[in-house]
Image (tube, rainbow, N blue to C red; front, side):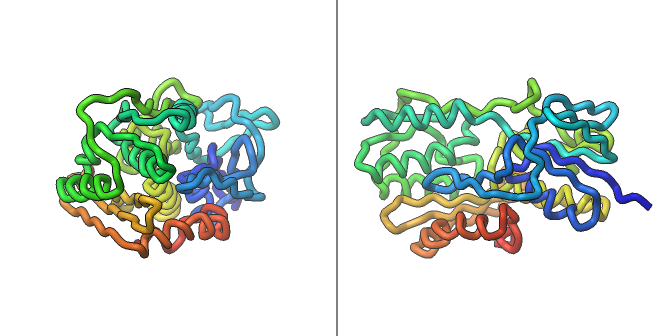
Length: 288
């Protein structure tokens, strides 16, 4: 009997982890326009080479006939996983431009992207800049998170201002003209899944995308299971302290937990090494 054929379009946080979950069980093709998994660390982008990625550019996706065309081949499949991410070029250009300035107040077009902005402000202020913040201190993650984050930012020298001078743009759909709407199992259409930043969910977070990739792989292998989403991020003030946030509040679960410790600063520094060794595979970190 022939193995189930699966095509994964995109090797970002979600796609690479769906691949690892499925590759030993099915005939899986992972496609990306380069041979790398990009890990976004606190200090920049780590390009991690993964030899099994097909270095091809997706040119067309036929969701009716389940095939993906690239600049080199056409791949037909039984199941298709779309993990093409979102276009963050506007955000990247914005952050690079702001490094030329000082004494500005920044906010986000999308409040769910504030975790990107806040870490960036911490980075700028560690370099002697004097940037300020206008936003809700991630209040969508719960009051405890919001209050402790406000204190952590003030302790780190970032003050709140009522008016913003510049706004971090939100990311835009990649390849498609809009973000894709999926059901609770990340199914976009029959036999087609959409995961990670490509989905309509306003919360676009690398760690969450990894969990979505793992879940989708398990769902294809084992059938219906429950996805337990959680928002996890860590902020470092580059002065030896880091704040780790873990919250399920956006998914109608009251759980929220915040810790400030030197330990998390060390852990954050070692994450890029971990993912380099693991070639982007989340592994046991999903349990923390």
